[in-house]
Amino acid sequence: MSCKDVADFLMEYLDGTLPRAQRVMFKLHIIVCRDCRRYIDSYKKTVELARDAGGAVALEDPPEALVRAILKSRPSHRANDQ
Image (cartoon, rainbow, N blue to C red; front, top):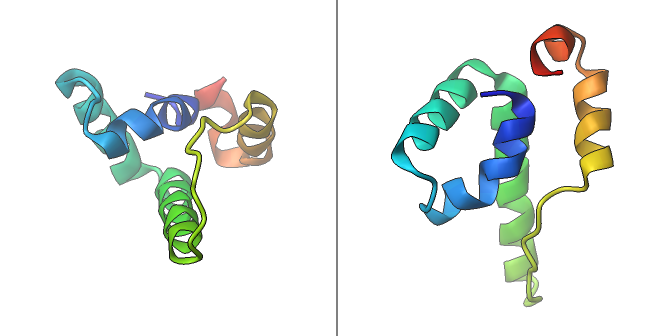
């Protein structure tokens, strides 16, 4: 599973609806990928802060251009994730 896959499947993972095989691959990836762990932690904190502020949170997939920019900026994963 790539970093892009983690971004694509994040909502299903957090909702508990990701199929078992993909969930296992997701967990294995975040064990070894510090950047994805940080992304997930940041995502969870953002949702929590928005809820604490009393606002409704629309959880959507990140924009494709943002995912590409993040992945492009990560030199240690350039070859693996494209």
